[in-house]
Image (cartoon, rainbow, N blue to C red; front, side):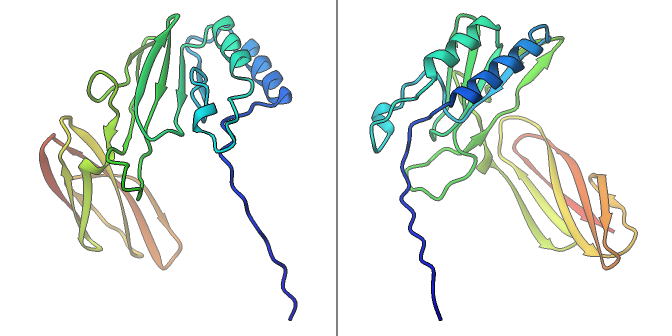
Length: 210
């Protein structure tokens, strides 16, 4: 039997925006220049040159041109990741929000998180869980299933949350105690219940299906 072999060599290129991509970004910014708020979502934070982080010591190609577009068209917030730490930088009235990984098995990644960004009347009002830049630690909200009908939500955060839990059950009609059904799906044999439950900070709540 013949075999086809594949070899992969992975490099950290450090970020690269092709001219066609840059043109598309500018056209998009022009089209929505009058928007109440403009968010840009990227992999790499364009404020940082990535030369020292790249295996090949490649810089972030297109970074300076991208920053010019961000400033020219009045982008309100730039959301980025890639690095496994949090950072907030405000420059020329633009907030650059970098968020750590939401999950990892790397031993050096001690803080996993995600963000909720608050917007009120066209103004960004919040983006930090704790000052000066921390995201919401994802490992401080946990769900434990006692069985397929019963789950306990533990909220160790310093904030109340609306936690979402999915129950996969035999097909049927169900009600939920200590929560509400957001959506229900069935394939004739199984029913999926998408449930939301409000859990106060530093408490736990049992949610069960009947």
